[in-house]
Image 1 (cartoon, helix red, strand yellow):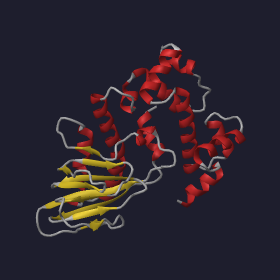
Image 2 (image 1 turned 180 degrees about the vertical axis):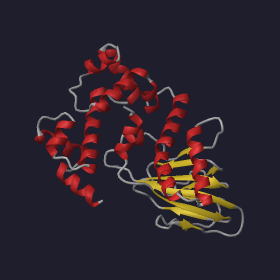
Image 3 (image 1 turned 90 degrees about the horizontal axis):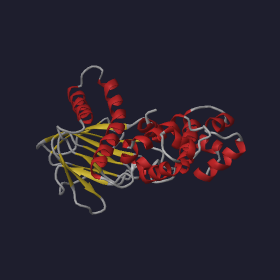
Image 4 (image 1 turned 30 degrees about the vertical axis):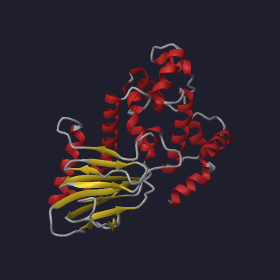
Length: 302
């Protein structure tokens, strides 16, 4: 079981929405608050990301990737002082600006479930900036390079290639950030959880079989640790005890099954370890504020 892929799949609620942005200086784009996660790829040229909260602008160059996981309002421009126009996510291509130096960007949003975000998402900073670095994150930056070629050359098949690469980028960006954190952080966090062999193996077990009757002793035995040592190690890495995380993941799995499949409530309850549909419905409503049936109907409407 690939835990990171499983987590991202649980967060996604639909396809990414993106637009090619071919601009010449001076230019500036304003992005309003988004219900998803906003992303930017700098394919050619240089630009500045300008937070709306007054934080210092962030310089970005070719090959850089930026993710704003909470979709906060911000702007991107060739210079912090350039005039801004609103970004239109429905436009296939945007061409604001003058006749100066050219920049090519891909801007868009990932649709994410924010009702009960997974810790991988909620623990991210407001701005995740991954500068181009020939020695790091080769898969991410190779993918960005391919996207740049596809968008700039308009070759046959680009309409099929680009959406697939954009979908893959969310995992690549998260993986790159987690790898960076694992090299500089000693505190709790998912970078540590996914690189600690015992914790990672227990997470794989939980994700592979969320409906199993797991106990802390079972999980500890699976990774060759005492109950106390495992519970301490898991909690330090993940930020919550094993059974608390198990309960969280069961409800996250239930939400995905309700949203993306037409299984009966009884089948969903059984898959995540509930023998009673009533007990499942009560637990689900406590976590999401909606009964399972109402949550499914709302997901269909959205």
